[in-house]
Image (cartoon, rainbow, N blue to C red; front, top):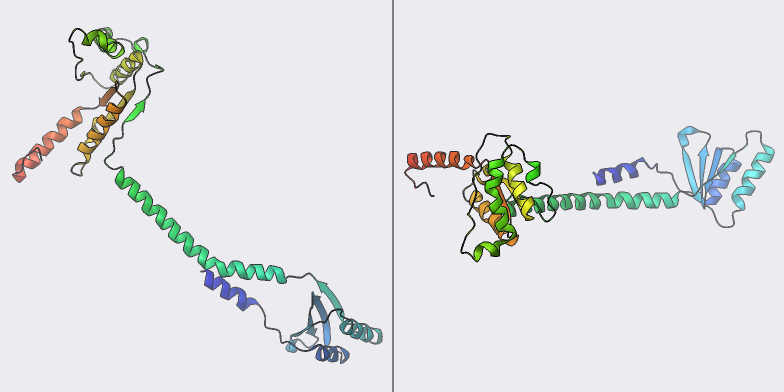
Length: 271
């Protein structure tokens, strides 16, 4: 594309024959010139006969011959030669040529940069494929407490001991008591199970991890297990904390499907 633009830019520049200044003055005195345009040290002469087009010459500094020839001709002829002084566009032409010359390099470099960014993003996604997608809520400043949960007084009473253990573990460990490995919250959707779990973390002032059980079940072998390991690694680094797994029944559905497939294929369900 850049080469095409460069070629088009150069092809649009008209080719004007170069003559010496004596030939240009001779054409002026012969009455063949209609307009003289001077830009810096270049003079472009336009013929009255359009079939001849234009010619150009280079002026010497200081220029007196061209100006004197035009003045003498205009003094003795009715059809005067128009003299135009233009701005120097050579700098702009040079800049335009440089930009157009560098355009292919910039386009190719931009293309490779884009491809490298895309490849880097793909690698990052591949490396994070087995990472847990758990959302962490810091609990050192409780935002949800038992006061925000209504209608489940018995459940809150049962969870009070869990809060006490998280806040004062040494009181229980001195008696040889151990906290349960987990608490199963059962109920229809919308009954406040997630809110209740966040309230436990808020009351105890510990971090709260929330993730859906369906995110552990993947079509690729080993991805779900990798996410389980990563989640509990994060929990260990932030212990004590609460790990809330929503829709845990998705594991049971997936396990039944795995058992059916394994049984049909003669493989072990653990695989």
